[in-house]
Length: 468
Image (cartoon, rainbow, N blue to C red; front, side, top):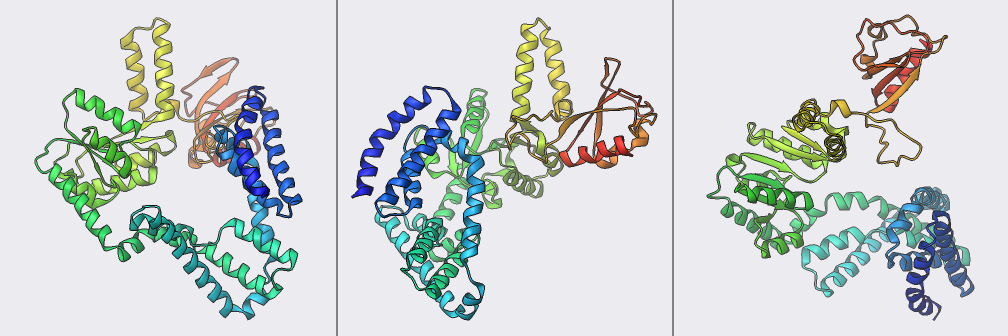
């Protein structure tokens, strides 16, 4: 009864209440309101004789149905990982290894029974809701292991004495082992589907056949890998210029809608060798990877270098952290979104300031020809998010040379910072900035040296400069 009231009334109250709180434009008030909703529903379910965890779970369900769910997710991200770690630590503390070792046969039986029952139930529900057999099988494989809420129920059962301690340990061990098997099941899900569903082989073969038929008479075309927003924008340009292309996308729903609208897009995973062969890579003039997924892009580059070493491959990436890796893999051109956005911002600013167009274009060509080297690295700040301040991405750091620094009187070359993969991008002396310092330049007291490198390398370079 309490659950029905919470779900029925909560759905109608949550959205307008969040709207009122959001209108205050205060992140502190917003976070406090999220905590109030979560703790309030947990308290209500506790009064009703249910668990606190169930109330928090219901709060999450209600919040997820509002348009503020992404904002809530962003605000609670720092707490989520820490609390999730505490949760699994407490679950691990409940396990008694000696009891499990003495009851390993029962643990194995519980593990098999749990996986079998959940697999059968999810597969049956998937088929009952109209999904095809491969999709239902993939869902069943992903959801067959135990979930986090099952551990909440087990801890509650143990606290209330609903299960004998020995039985609780066996079930807990079986559930934990099932979760450890989750990565294995997900990694091999495609093989399992292909083994048990013969029609999946047929569908893939038909998709490859349709792709091969479509490209049979195609020559000098562009293979567009990925038909998302970037891929569709590229295709519009190619169509205006009369350039033939073949677009590949692994999202069947997107392919269905785009093909129904008359777009030349075919279902296929571009990271698979046979798909690229069916797309007539042997006769293509270029390959464009429009999705920002470096591992898949590297796979495509490897296939392209093996099958057609002379074809140029253009790759899209989020930032400049993977530029060198993609270039070494054979990418002809790399488009870094963050850097290209900065270039467009600089271009518009220069043109509005009255710089001649040919001078602006010259600067753009210089930066792109140097693989964004001029714009490589950034000064991190306290407000940077984890993605913006990735540890592997080049950064800039200003090092003040004090009177007691070990590098006073030393030349830049003698410091040998290049061995640490650190580059000196500029030296500021008496207010004058030298952006191309020579290796023979000797450092003096009060110089400011600007270094570029990874966070770890910069730390080592700074220690060498200041302490020797």
